[in-house]
Image 1: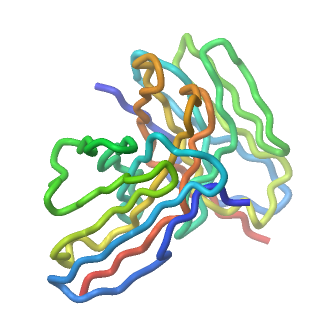
Image 2: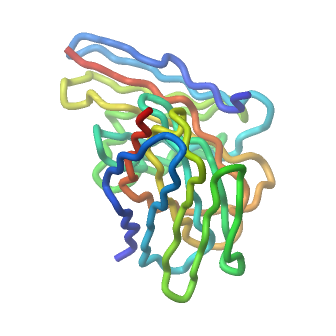
Length: 118
Length: 115
């Protein structure tokens, strides 16, 4: 079964509104969570890395004030797209790595969220 | 520049046939190479993970190979099924030590299995 739950799976919103996406690790404590964006027929692009209890590290070109990431607990990280615009429409995916896991361990991905901004 | 290139970009095969997907990478420092299956509108699911010293690894009908010298990997799918239709993504993890890893994603090969 799924070990990383992402919600919602799809969302449609009006331009200018904010949307929150949740990523939960179901049966392990996730010290690190990653947020990706994927455009059609493109590879996943890392947006940011979040460690529990600290500020997220954003990749170059990703606006931290627009994509707010909160990783307040070991099982939950949220991505909030603020003042969404049509160009923010994309498939957003999270992944999680557990406490003490080595780099060779599996990295579990959420099922993704399709965001459509009208 | 760290890059992962996959070929072919797309592939159509008949059910029951075998196929092989290719992945070439120029990534350093290398930690491990992963193959993921991504169904449309879903998150990636891990198929195999191979470190530098591993040449081949199987997961059911999926067999991955790794040649660390030539920096090439392949994913062989045996006796394909309709449910194998998906994008297959090659991902290389950089070795930054400790728990910090950085993933370099390929663009994927879109496989369509027809009846």
